[in-house]
Each structure stands twice: as structure tokens, then as C-alpha cells.
Image 1 (cartoon, one colour):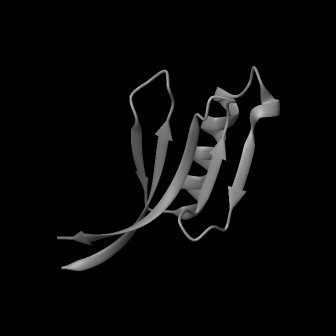
Image 2 (cartoon, helix red, strand yellow; image 1 turned 30 degrees about the vertical axis):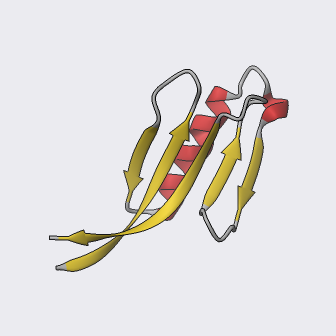
Length: 80
């Protein structure tokens, strides 16, 4: 068994169920997260707040004043 690194885009929006979207590439995960957040914040771009380079996540963005957010976490999984 071999370990595999995955990057999971976590979406927490008060209008839908939480989502977890896995990616094998960090850049693709962050790009997808940023694109989703920009689409969700289109009506209120002033609420768009990004943060990178944190110990807990690879990327984080809030896109509404109510705390809707998307973040990317790095995880190790076992590839069987």
C-alpha cells in the first residue's frame, strides 16, 4: 500500500449541503476553489476575502458577510 496526497476543496455554503471535492494537484484544487468563490460572490465582490499559506489549510476564502466559505486541505490517503 502506498500513500497518496490529495487536496480536498471543502465548500460550506448556507444555501446548500457541505461538499468535499478531491484533487490530486494542489494548483487545480486552489484554482477550482477560487473560481467557485468568485462565482458565488459575484453579486457582492466586496465580501471576497482570501488567505493562503496557513498551517491548517492550503487556501481559504470567505465570499459572503454571513460566513460562507471554501477552503483547501491537504490529506494523505492510502492507495490500495
